[in-house]
Length: 339
Image 1 (cartoon, one colour):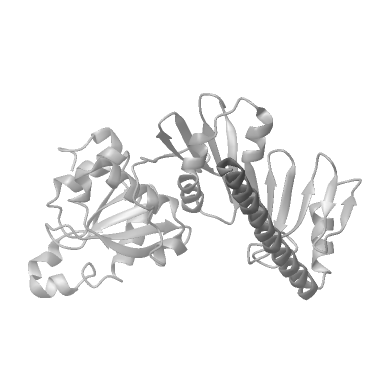
Image 2 (cartoon, one colour):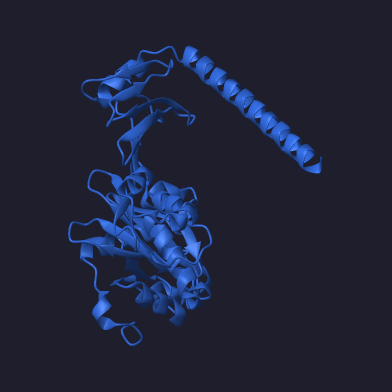
């Protein structure tokens, strides 16, 4: 392995980690002792379980490009493990490391994709960004794109994913409190927060960043107030059921959303204003998320839903009336011009 790769980026693994991987391989019928491969070729049983740590995405890409790796030979890259299950072939059993062991979720063939650096990098970093549950559900891949994300693990054990797109530099960092923190740098705004969210994987945040990229690219301003409005963070309401989420923008305004995504109340920290789900308007002395959550928890949501439907209906009626008024004015203007 060292003959084709950067030896400084190859490391041995501890015996405890080696034994855990060997034990995990006994769950795979192609890798386990006396498995399918042994039935076809008894001599394959002599092949040892051999694993090594690899650093650097280019080193990993070169590893897969080389090919012709023996069965039971594997590499560990960050929290991912790839083990060859077809002697001399290109069938890599793919696992994600967890605190208690490993989760197997895929069988990858890398030789062709390794010829495209961006495509290969997006595939690997997608798996790194994803949670174990997303991997198990086969929901771990970023959409096709040309943004090349890289991953770096800091001394505190948390990872930072970064990418460049034209004049923009994006950073998504995992935090010790379970949140992900996304920022962007560009010429007119040296640094601003895009979002901060808990309960979401780095993959979720990166997907949202890439989806919002057209709007982010066109957002060029030196006005810190406008930059603050665009930045936001969101999190699960602590004393409400799953799905109730707070969103707070950089200017201090925000809202509480119900599980179906509807905003049921809003606030503004600068003006100390609060609009409750019934449409009531309040000025509070001291802002408290907990107090608002207690108010919301005590509400009759059937009445709230009725109010929301009435607001939607009134809004639709107002839009229709506005369009009709605009159309009449346009027709009158055309008539006067023709006259």
